[in-house]
Length: 148
Image (cartoon, rainbow, N blue to C red; front, side):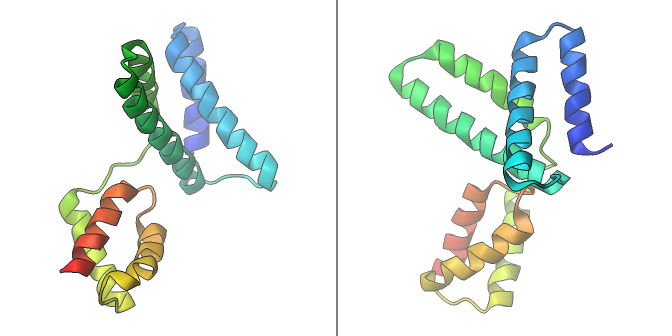
């Protein structure tokens, strides 16, 4: 079963169970997928869907931080609930050690030596690790690897 089919099945299950919060989040995800498919006139594969889910999760995390600063706990709770629903659709994430090892391998393969080569390393890391690791953690690992 593809990720897109799984999302559709989960939406149907949420409808049957009358889980309005979960249903709304899944519909928002489906709308984002459909929007990209219509805009680019393509059928998205699982990797592209994971990228969309990743983007939506980043938006939720940013919103949570902003709402916490503003003291809006009601909105924080709503964003956290959406975040939990979205995280179900991500593949298992790499650990910090696995990310560091992958970054070290990429740095060696690219032949990078110093912070000036961060762009080259990040481009390759994005190709290899997108959807498998939090890109913020990857960026931090790249900075550490190039600094040391």
